[in-house]
Image 1 (cartoon, rainbow, N blue to C red):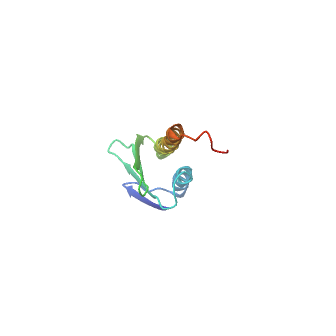
Image 2 (image 1 turned 180 degrees about the vertical axis):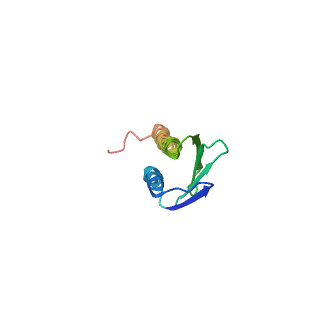
Image 3 (image 1 turned 90 degrees about the horizontal axis):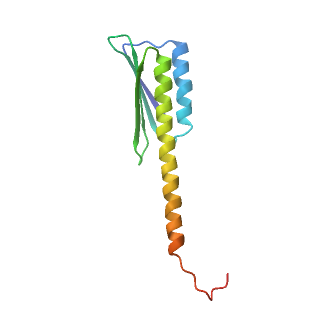
Length: 117
C-alpha cells in the first residue's frame, strides 16, 4: 500500500507522527495492498488542525474524510473512524448484494422431478 503524507504549515514530531501512523494501520488492515492512502495535515488561521484522509482503491469508489479539531490526535481519530465506517459499509453492501443475487437465482432454478438427487 502506498501512503503519502502532506503537511502544510505543520511540523509533526516523532510522537505525533507515530500516533498518526498507528491509527492508519487500522485502515490498512481493511484495504487491498494496491490501494493508495493520502493524508493531509494542516493548520488554519484559528490554530485548529485539519486532517484529511483519502483512500483510492482501484476499480472501487474513493473514500474520503475530513475533520477539524484543536488537536492532531482528535482530528486523526475522527477521520480514521469515519473512513473505517465507510469501508465496512461498502464491504457489507457488496456481500449483501451477492447473497441477494444468489437467492434470486436459486428461486428461479427449477429441477426436474425425475432427477436423481
